[in-house]
Image (cartoon, rainbow, N blue to C red; front, side, top):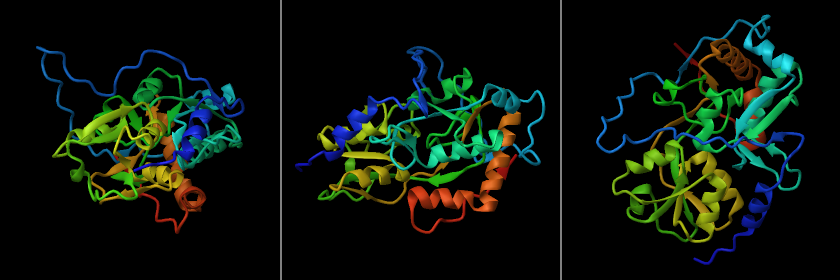
Length: 311
């Protein structure tokens, strides 16, 4: 299908912009993958213990900041450092006109900054690739990651997650004239997803398996789709909705074939910060803030926010 990629030029131009007021350049350390196969001849990786991936630490009582806590250190620094991406329209993407990174995930970060500082603008954004999200949490480059990140038992071996703040599921984006109805219709055909994502892992398990086209971020997957390098894109339906909003020749099809509960990733060394973030999320569910953020970015009638689950 001939497709005029109206959004490609905007996205490529936006990717080169730097928003001085909201984003900082990301560091360039060598990333270790979120999961890797064992070297040839070595023992297989240890099995991941089972867990309840939706369960998090119980929240603090109130939003006061104790002296000496990690939250006090963030407050003394004068900014909360958020790790996210710039290519997930509606959740975290760079506006090509203002160069600001904005969306549902960014507004979640702004609410946490507001709780700490009384000012949602005390938020510094660092753009990080999906495959580096846990690395940057572990090494302290960022205070937290909010980036359409699925909480699961494998990831919980390395980082803590907040309670679930959004429920998504994986589907498929194809051209408007495509006969494809579900992921199984794409066996052996090129489907794009992102390195370091659970979406890519899920595609490895589909039968028949598609031919995987791997890109660094979802903006690059949309470009690959528009240039004909991939017949489809498969990831969370929330992300695909943002792609479809950019490309009038695309549609999202099929039922969800996974569950993707989004959590906020925080270093295991700061459990008091995880508890504090969970208290912010409790407040957002109760006072309507979550619903207002949903309405602003996703429209329609906001559903009930995901119920908190604690361990």
